[in-house]
Length: 88
Image (cartoon, rainbow, N blue to C red; front, top):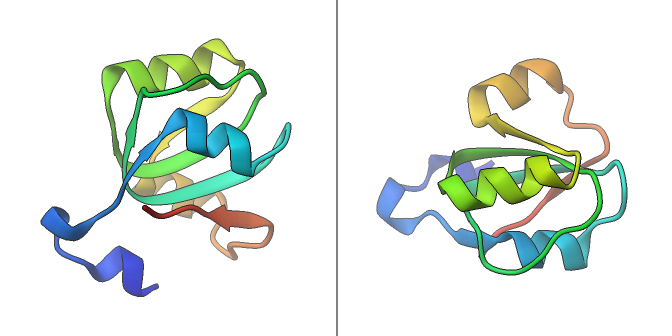
């Protein structure tokens, strides 16, 4: 929870390559910052984040996944069960 309360300047930046390394097909991922387009992702994941770079969002969607704004992600998965938190 403390990650979500940080000022925007202190939120982590996470590349899709890191998401790919730490997840498997079908995982739910919460990034309390911005998702960037560095690296490669080849499996489907659902990612909720404060923001996405255009390339980061595109790569997640190209792999069959979903890039969701944080508010929509929290509404869809309110209990947080099975969600992987990935920070900087």
